[in-house]
Length: 268
Image 1 (tube, rainbow, N blue to C red):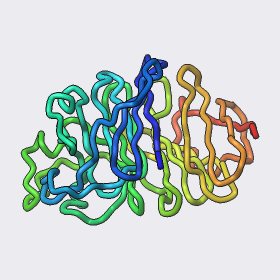
Image 2: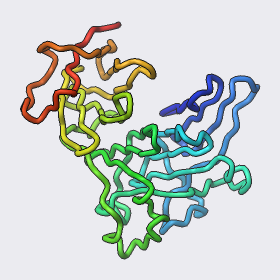
Image 3: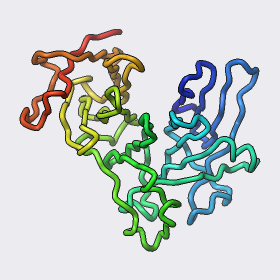
């Protein structure tokens, strides 16, 4: 079963997919057959050739370099790969060029990553089940820091985004705003959560579903977002300047004048 697709930015023909069996595929609609790139190896003290595989839930392509992509799933590590190196190595198990993990989850705690998203500048969001959302940058990399699992306290602490519930259905995560100034996720409580990226402050909760909101995505060119969950409809949210019953109350003193007020319309 395919959990997620990741379209190469700027290309209408190419996309990646990640599969429950741990395999990563590359598709070009102009070709007859897709290419299986590799099967994601499970971490055993950073030995990726042990023969064990890990199921995958999320994949995202770096918008600055379309050969680079991140995958995550059945453990607490985000793995970064370069498709060009995979082709050169010709290994059954892909070897990541970098990894990310919050220091308090090292060594292996059995956490699951349910969503990934890249910003325009290469920042990487990862949503952890039963935990928070974390913002990784280059300096948070395990290889960048010559990581030693017995001295994980040396890892820099990534910014986190908290308050939502990610315990049931797989939750995605996304950047919002023309310059990725905001972070958004669904929640098991039925709300869309929006945080300010620069300080991690929660600025909006929007009632998006009677049960769980699982996906939140922004239009590629407009300030419009879509959300969906366990209900059968899709909510389309656009900027507004008035109170709306679908907006959960927050402390208005914590919201800047430039922050969005959003209203919804419903598309079945």
